[in-house]
Image (cartoon, rainbow, N blue to C red):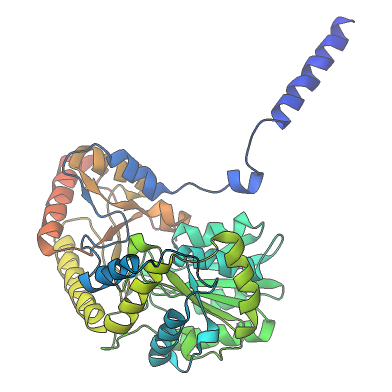
Length: 417
């Protein structure tokens, strides 16, 4: 064998070795990792860290919900259930959704293993490889990345930040809903910004989706965490759409009843989808755990007073934190209409991941970087205010001390959204 032949064989062997490497498929490898988790991981082992990075309260799930689960376990509720959920929970959810948004039947309800599982199932139902999906951002990254797992492409329409906080350019969104668009994803109230879509905006978007046959997936997990017009629930596409339209609403027990660790959610969708949705549930999780569903029944039937009290507490915490942050020079913050976060601008946040890691490392303060929610979020950080004011005070003091110790980073940061 000549030297040149040996070189060719060696190169071919190297290529074959690279191609046979045990890698995940390209669509999965291209997914962006969670920067929120990256910051949280940097906080492991930091003494007395104040973790405001995740979207959950520091309170445990209410006792009456935990008791319902305990009773169900004691009664042996440890077996498989119907793919779409036990009948009593679907009936309870239909009644609950009906009170908030108009007549809804159990046949239009599917129980899921968490809200994020509901988002995946909804996307699997209607979108696939080569489809075009539009999403309103900044946005919890799961919504943007889920369609990509399935081979779809995602185009984003960014909210803008100004004197009135975060707002939507409706004309820009409508222009993005072109013929051939398969699905629109809207999260309102929004994570991370707290922006809430108005009823008029929803009607215009629904009309365009109807006109072009676009599926509308509404992530309404934060619908009860709403602070506008003395209402008990945010505006919903379910208020406007018929139940047999191309509208799928996703929800969760995590926020309104403090059940983040229980992993229980639901979908409201046309009845004609349910047979196929049941198949997807079977091939994803089979069903939500039986005893967790029993806890869900207690939450839906007996939890209204708790939820209203929770929202009152969150409103007070929001207002308290906004006032405290506005006293710190260089911070630009507005009170949002919904959800449980402040998404605000501060010096140094044009490199928000680096800033949040430094806050953890030097000040034991855990915030989520704006870049975790897409490039539109760079220049901002997210603070979950679902806690008591003493904890907020401690966090504000640490942030103020950090900024005073780093005056060189106190320069104006440009908004890129």
